[in-house]
Image: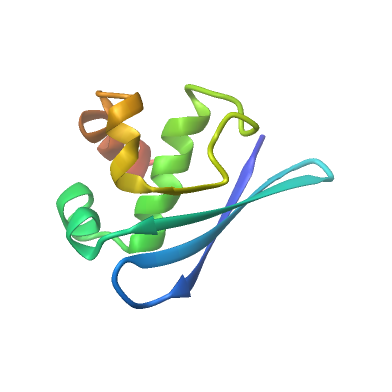
Length: 95
């Protein structure tokens, strides 16, 4: 089981987060950006951190944590996974 920790590291535009995936004794770190508008469109009524966590749960169901880019913007996910926006609410409810 992978634990996902999301920490804001920037409050400007775009929002910036450090994401740490913990599995056993190993950890992998990422830097993820997201425009406020993207957050509001994807997950109205939730926190930006919950949106990022849900996005990582979505990604981890589709690829290994080693395959996830170490630095990316949430807006690129639908380019690789067209079902992202439709599937995200399901992952948000698991966060």
